Amino acid sequence: MKLTVAFSWNDGYFSNRYTTLWGSLAWAFNAANTLSFVTSGNAGANKRVVTNPLLPTPLLQNNSQVYNLIYTYRKGNLVITPYYPYTVLKANPNIGITTGSHATGGAILANYNFKHGFSPTVRPEYIKSSSGNTLDLTSNPLGHGPDTGAFSFTLTPTRAKDGFFVRGDFSIVHVTDFNAATGFAFGRTGLNLNQPRGVIEAGFVF
Image 1: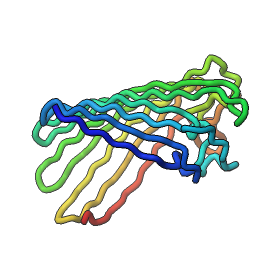
Image 2: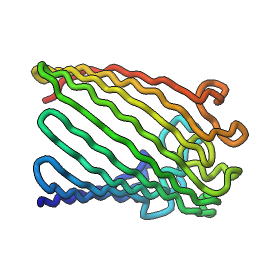
Image 3: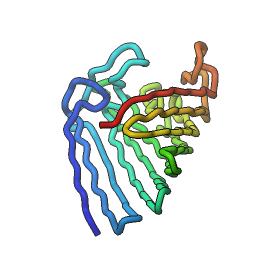
């Protein structure tokens, strides 16, 4: 068994306040099986937030604690990684968070490296938030309203050769348990429960 420890001190979600701590423990039982525990949290109350919700520095995420349990299996060209994330947001009226909440979920990341540098990756993921107060807008860790959930499926094909790579990332996201009176989903009206997303990038690996 091989243990790997990592630690980081950073500004969380680009808040420019260096109060976020991040750490990980990884146990490699053998070449094929690794179990990791990754956690992060804010050591102090971070009130800095921008008014535009599309920009970085979200108040709720910057003041949450995140715990991830990750298992990785490697066999030849195949890598399968199921993981379980758990997020806790404690109430702090001093910075405008009146109700605490938490979010749980699960995902599976699978990748296979074919010949000639082609490797598709798929990831189904589901996450659900819960606060016990569906009318309190400060208990909204997912951004779609209190006690909402989201399911996503992502496909990431990659082609690499001699340091050059081109990669696509295509996904569909579906919001669950949505309430238009207390949340905002997708689209200009905020009422679309589904949103496709896509991006293509290319570059060199040195």
